[in-house]
Length: 416
Ligand code: AMP
Ligand code: GLY
Image (cartoon, rainbow, N blue to C red; front, top):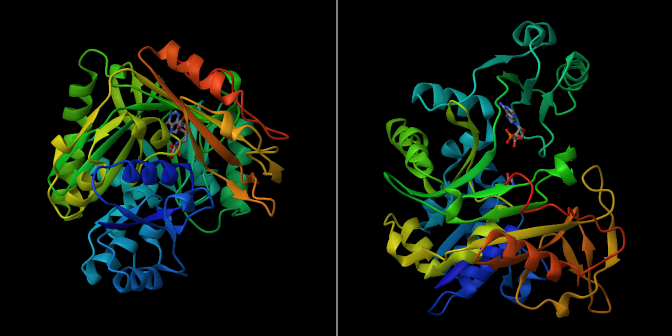
């Protein structure tokens, strides 16, 4: 089987590793990929959706996996172009990927299908925004377009809200677009992943990620500084409640709205006192959640995804290990405001009993891995108990270092 994976970060490195470890022969291609990924996958030259799909046709690719979301909504849409070329794609067409690309589209979808989420108002100017906030704090403000993870502000007071509104609606920092004023929800967060194939779905192991740069959930939001995954996080009837109130109605809603979907669907949830509420949908796996969840999967991941992309979900092809999996991100100096590149990474070969996935690294002229991005690498370890996994992931991460490295010390312990 020839599989092409789109993306270049730690999530794609984890997906490609799971494919490489699947039984049977899997030939892996990667676009745009990274030096670490190219140890497992062949590099692909392309400059957009059309040329990528032409490459797949020319090279007889059997399956395309969208690791990241941007190509799903770019040009004619990756899945749309794959479908036109007759190539099974794991990742939804452009029209369905609006669930992630437009927060207003997602809210309207949830309202239409009675899926629990925070109340909201959609506005286009600062006066309307102030009226919608109505002096109630905390309030949540979200730009309704792509903003590289910087489009959401949880505002504790008027000063914070005014600053964000000024940037988004007056200076138009992210360009034109509407703004959602959203009800503030309280409770622990949980990330739920489902493999969705038309009207079928399977809920995977849940995860919790750590979005802030500093310990104790302080400092600015990042793409995620670590993640924890275990089936044990489904305490009591949590899995059943999430399935009945959120996952099932979402899959049925996609069917009712004629929104085709084959791929991972990510539900960002807040477990409020009134029950789970959806904060956001993503049309892909989470990053770094994928790096924690995928190592728990045993079985035939490659055929599981291939068969799903062809319209036949086969849950029995995979199963989840017991215990806990924890991943810890090492980020470069300056992240998330900026990122420094070119710091040599030492100790990678000393890591044993844990996996290392590369998020932002490259090989230098001397053949050493050096930093090349905000999040640099992710170390993942497992254990029968959460504490055992925490101890292991920290002991192994200690062995790896580079100048200016930033790493949280409370991944897997905080929020439990
Ligand atoms: P999002 O990009 O929509 O996932 O939001 C980023 C982060 O902002 C989430 O992971 C939450 O921590 C926080 N957040 C988003 N929406 C809300 C909300 N309605 N209430 C409280 N916190 C929120
Ligand atoms: N870790 C959050 C995300 O992938 O969106």
